[in-house]
Image 1: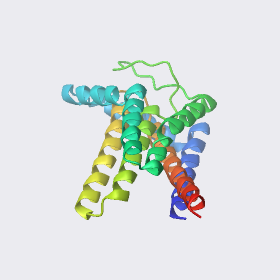
Image 2 (image 1 turned 135 degrees about the vertical axis):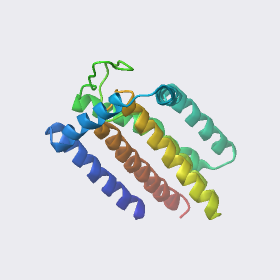
Image 3 (image 1 turned 30 degrees about the vertical axis):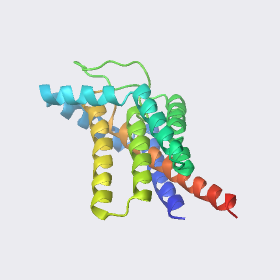
Image 4 (image 1 turned 90 degrees about the horizontal axis):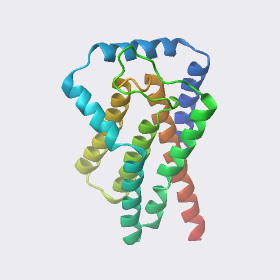
Length: 206
């Protein structure tokens, strides 16, 4: 199944990033360089954009939007796609569990824009955005056949995920590897959920 192939590739990339973090490999040095670059190139409008983006994608906001989307899909009798949205809270929980296993500290900067004492790897905001926008994109692709609309939706979802990832690095609360790992984990989680739901649906209608 193509979903399983996507999940395997995404998990392999996640494992590579995890290994680099645990082994303090080359990527971790690049992490610091990227972080310092953004700290040295701050601007008022970018700071406002990053803060607003992070606020809009906090856990409560993402879960509320997910619940609303699931309710609409359930009301329209799209049970399979409503169930797919369960990937959002479950994926966020899995991400949080990995955070506590890895125990990576947040970045430290001389003049931080935001100070957090929680753990860093993988990024909670980045996986929440990946799961939420990724799930909505899958729903749209399943019900929309017009290619311009499909491409526009894919571009929008990708842009929002990347914007959230950028915001977390720009604010100095995550390393590049944190957000990349979260995106990989989110993609794998969605692929596995979709594969599982398709299998459940085939058995249901046998």
